[in-house]
Length: 390
Image (cartoon, rainbow, N blue to C red; front, side, top):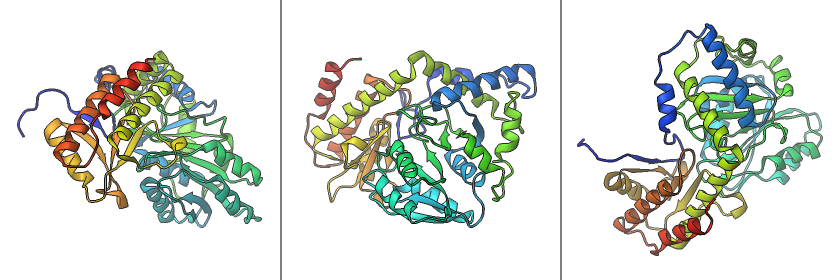
């Protein structure tokens, strides 16, 4: 490949662009992960993460992707043959469900529309028939990345409480943590799963489980096999600032810096920025005359926008042109959505000019790909951002 001037525009819904401050933090010599310097680092990170998850309970850090966080959430809370309620929300919810089935868990699936969030009423119907409390957990994706749909986790907690059901609530917040308001403790979540490569602005390689006391108690009796993912030795070592096996030290340097950056900006300001840039994107898509995949505006994701191309058009061709001609990476349609949608990631480290560059690249790519659209989308974004400057 020939040299390309300028910087690659990575705007898939994760991994996201890594700020220079975090790259510099990672680029330090590795230290002894059993020594006093690491102890201080470990304690600061473990405490700082609680503020991002909005919890006073422990947060475990594992080496791995969001899929590792999924597995840790399941093997620490369930036994073979246990029942769990999961939702047909999208590509990632489906993958999580398949993992649970592979582990020997019996999954009760609540069918749904990939274009809408989870329905609390359907969960009430399911739990109200479980008088023997055979269902041990309810698992839901907060922000389904395949379709750009955000579900109301507080509604899911309300549904469980309405039925007076003891099931654990397990939530995937991989593409929402650090980008969309999330409240682990207030919403009564028992296990929250997240990963490093999205709102936390890091490379892939770390995953997280935020735990409630109820989840920790359940882990004492869980029967699924677990070694690397076991919370018990992790929590014991974390109390002293250490880990039970070799941690990803240089990624932890980056995580420490990311937590500082989030604190400096203010977490609530981070959410406002994401909402504002997301709305500018949606204004642009609407002005283009294209359809946002998520049907309910109350469930629009502030991490990404999934855009449906007109029938007869090829979203994959659009993305190929964007990459080849403008060095711009967009998210592809996953599973049954391949070729039908493209996804614009607008999470992590970005501002108005970053977003406008992306939208300009998309508009040029739409024209080259001969996808029918109305011109003027960029002007809609400019007007929105100019009139709503933070």
